[in-house]
Image (cartoon, rainbow, N blue to C red):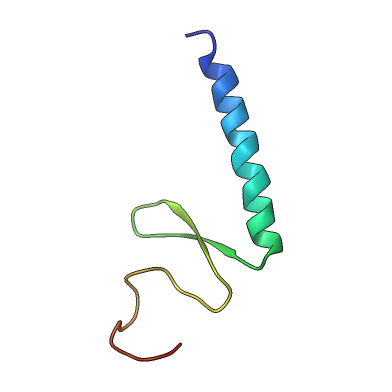
Length: 57
């Protein structure tokens, strides 16, 4: 139980590090309908949005 706060701090540092790398690569952080943070590639959109039967982007 004493290691729980340490794990939370390390988890946040890990997430911040890789979030910064994704932003540097051009990904955009977006919140989906469920409230989760997703990283969308440049020129992309969240899964489930738009018409999947249209060819190309």
